[in-house]
Length: 455
Image (cartoon, helix red, strand yellow):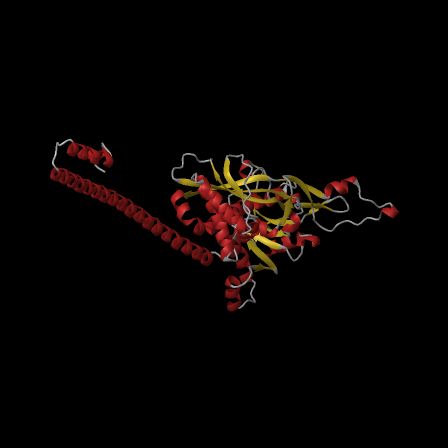
């Protein structure tokens, strides 16, 4: 209402006009005209004020409707993208077994992203959604610059481990020993278990008990992955299988590097692998019963079938099992082993083609497992490019079952990115590089190797 009519209320204004008429200051007609004029002005301004107020409210309502429409458009876009991402997830990676499981893992990753962006209420909402699906996100303990971390839900640990086995030769062929704490022990499981008869005084000696187990000490392994915050926000569910695959490949590669080639330095987490452990049994390779030295000095082309027969002859009976395999780089297999096999004759062209592409790589009746961490080229020094044995008896990969995916403060200068950190707690112990026979003489262990002699 206008300021003019706000100064006095309506009743006072009418009383003022009537008072002027009673005192003879105005005539009756003037009084009536005054009241009429006052009423018309009052109604005009009242209507004007109402119209202004109504217009103002209409404008505010229109803005609210527009904002609601925009929000709805964004929501529709997000839902469409979410559906597209879930479809992409299922079609591009069958690792999860179901759409619900795939979405649940994606939501687990999204919870970490929301926390990294400071959207705690949204993170809590996602965690509640996961709880309703029976997926529990357990917070990590922190430390090692790990923040906002969660252990991989139990439902997905087997998926992650299966991926690592498919990517890594060491894990797929060795004995994976579950640990309930960072320090523990495991039986050596090499050769046959001894049998005693206490009633006849034949009991295990202290040395037997000591040799029957090996110590394990699991350490935290970690790997970093950088993802843009906007991408994490928009495509977390679609990225979930990629994140799982990348971490699985990274850890599988490290397990292979350490398991086969670890030399005890920091680069290999102070762990000795299969080949350095075999070379370390004796000071001279010629004294090592587990090493066959190349008969004719020279590069790989000088290796012949007798070199491999020598390896197989050195392998103990207890290590010649259904799990026994050759392990080498694929370049060594195709350029040396397959070349020797093809020169032996008796193989049809069809068998050669099918053997190369459609069947398990084989040599002398043993499966061949290739791994990229073994020597690929002919080095300038003597080396072991191939080993033969049962790695389930030769080594242990001890690990705590918990796996983690967290955001990390390791790279604080990275702008606009979420630094994801994958963790596992593992250790590798090689214990099958040698054995002791009943006569207390040194003998070959659960695996043997061919030492190249470059001359």
